[in-house]
Length: 293
Image 1 (cartoon, helix red, strand yellow):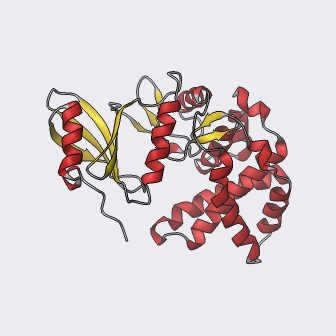
Image 2 (cartoon, helix red, strand yellow):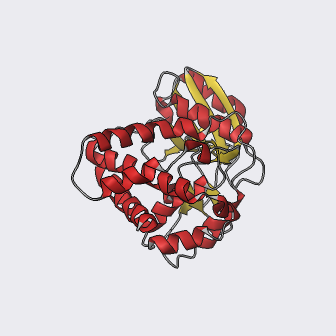
């Protein structure tokens, strides 16, 4: 069942007033129709002719922690990170509010082989980093992946991939993923916003601190899903300096964890999301197979 997206007029009066007191009267609001995150995400047209992008979520929503994480990520960013700047944040009317620079003419990145977007994506990826500030360590993000992986392995499911995953996880030490670099942690085509002049990384709800190569690793199965072979996807990532610092066992283990989470969600997650989770799992499975053959 599709959940209705929040609209600007759904926000409490006090929340809308706080935004307008800071940016001016809003004469039009366009909610983003894509994405699975709860809350409001909308372009606001301001009376002076400008636009900003608003994210809002009720304080008592289960997604509030993700907004708090995104706010911390934006506070940690240096000017080098290719992300729309957070212009303001507040807690008003029982809602967490964040307002960002609006990127005009942005579209979802095309990650397919020979796409003209790929050089810009790689350049943007090379600029993510710097200190992660007060963000939680990557181990906090991995807990859910490890939990789902354990559930699947405990079910003794049929198929050769489960032994492959188990072996990869046995060789993984979480300490190999540790570090202080700012990580987006959820890179995919929908979080890469392409314009004529630049590529922006958006939606930092899962940002954390860890080894600098992790974001490149997280993009590999997305490239495979877009049509690259595992070898081609890794060759693209090998052009990034951070990729060269990745320990082989840690990279394979993280690939297995990432994939098993999608395997779990494809089986037991929300019905409307199972198909795209299954496609992601298939791409991840191909990658782990390539790395363990």
